[in-house]
Amino acid sequence: MRACSNKVLPDLGVIAEWSVFLEDMFDDMINYTSENPQVVRLEDWLDNHPMQYRDKIRQAGEKYAEDGWNVKKARYKGFPKIEKQFITQKDDPVKERMICGPDDIKKYKANAFINLMEKISMKCIPEYCGAKNWDEIAEDLSKFDAEIPDNIWAASDGSGFDMTQHYEILVIFEN
Image (cartoon, rainbow, N blue to C red; front, side):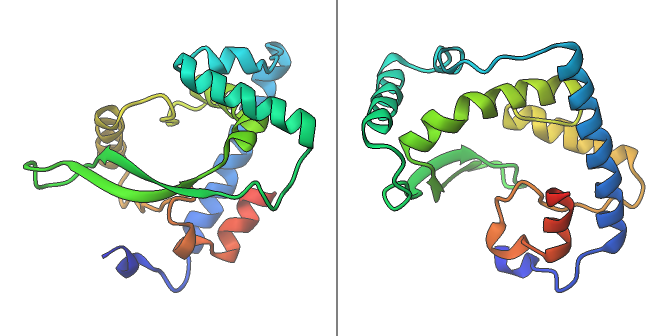
């Protein structure tokens, strides 16, 4: 069914609106961090995780310090993910699927920064849902849908990267 969602051409109105939205959003984030300087600390991010996970990431960091960066070894790996889905059939809202994710060295190098950016996004972008659970996200989406006439929905999180990497969308995120 997902393959049926392909669009041959992007909606140019959505592209134009997203360009303006992203420019304003990044201005808000830059202003926030200018007034509230931030420091990225690996331990602040690791404190949110179980001890076994922390040790695994620290070991990856030690290995990185010893071996350096080897892009051939740092590949994304597939793993199963079970998550609740927003569906109309309430009998089984759980879906299991295979997804890909970064190895531990990439997490060591990037996740503390990404986590801090998510916290800043939560402060600067009311629509951002990084720390919300699916029920909260679904409630927000329903509110947005009711408030916006002729709403056009599109995935821009990269989850459908295999079919949504239109040139025009990439241009927005590169600028």
